[in-house]
Length: 481
Image (cartoon, rainbow, N blue to C red; front, side):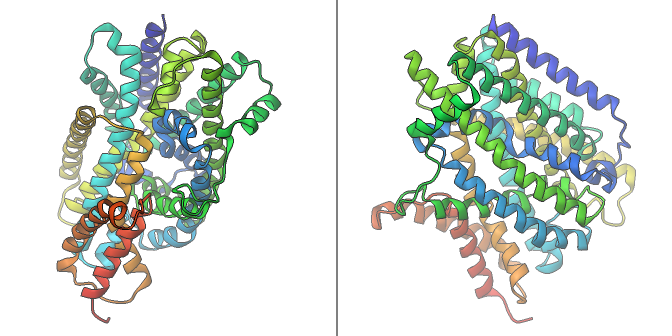
């Protein structure tokens, strides 16, 4: 029975991961948890970051993208690469020069304490909601395939997954995650390759046959030149670049791994290689989507309205064979855990360093360690509450939800960093929190009114609008240096 295979694969993989982290030696102190002693090999970091950025969402949601939008997601992926180059040569030199543990420490030095807290709080909101949305989708898929048939509630699935993440991040933090993410990226890519092979085998397709099937499919369209479409090439390219800058370069989660490298040069090589690797990986997911929809059409299978459900439905129903169940479970679990574990660690780091300031003078190491442990528990509970909220509210396509949330929550961060980097003016630190809150509210109003007044629908450029409003507000309230 596929249910037993899924349940066994899930249990074995989580057990393997926890044992792996127990075998890996870690100092267990805050230096290891926050910075990994700044001695991580850059090649290992680059490979592991693939799994962190992709998560379980990409494995099930990106293939579902092709039904409505074809392979136009690759336009955003090209923008992603441009964003990684900007991060490598604009932001990383700044972070390494200041030797930051939390990247939001830059806001304290450049703009002031309230700006620092504002940036940290928007990161906490952004990362918690985004990571919880990704983990919610994975837990939903695993629950439907493995746990629900045994009569166990959704809360049980969420609890098991969160407990596993908590156990292997509790002691080593980012030091363990750098190693486990590399392992999980390998498992995810191997599993995806197995699924592509299984689908092509069912359709009797050779590698050249796969390419021909994609080329002949209307879903194989990769570029859109219609300037009025939300999928217009230039629009998606620019959106992809800025989404990467804010969701990676201004994100403590992704930058914390880069800052564990021994030097700026190593971190830049890591970032550029990682940006290149993202392109073929996402192309693989989109190709899988075209194959899945083509196979379903040939077999006369009804496809779900939500693209997120297609791959889990075909695997769970046995349409792709029992062989696929095991690699699918391993792959989606590996992708989900590699994203959620670093999110949990970075949230703990930001709260401890930015808000509680346990690395400031006067806090004893033993007390700082106790505080970090308590914060880590609180973050795990916050994850559970957010997943419960997503479960009650329901969802559409999760990847679209994540990017739209990013427009509202990362926009003020982009505005703050742009003001600090590209102007010499002195911000009115006391009003920065009000500007940062007012900008997303104004964006929400414009998003609602634009279709009614101007027959225009905002896409992910809400991020740029939000950042621009924040930047203008800071500029108007600032003074000359």
